Amino acid sequence: MLNLIGTLVGPVSSILDKFIEDKDQRNKLAHEIATLAENQAHEISLAQVDVNKEEAKSPSLFVSGWRPSIGWICSASMGYHFVLQPFIVFIAAMYGTPIENLPEFDMSSLMTILLGMLGLGGLRTYEKQKGLTK
Image 1: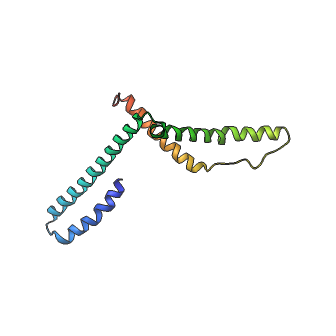
Image 2: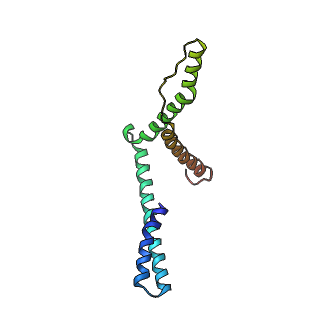
């Protein structure tokens, strides 16, 4: 998000260079624009947090259950990929019928989703340990 803000504020600063000759005033305006952009990004993030809280309160599984369902899908996929599939291949090879073409998942996509969810879970644990939440 901050990279996006820098991308947007950069061209505005170059426009200020063309129209405002006083260096101090130009720097002050550039700082105010950057601060406004950061405040706007912060407000958007807080609004998303409020939406997330309301979704989590919903009794409907179609609203509040989508995050846990993604977690369970990722867990089941990892269990299959790292435990079940090797076990099936081992047992089949042990009985003399090797299996070569078991389905495989795109683990890079699954790991991206799962690690993102675990990172958010880790942040939640940190907040609870510091007493920042109830």
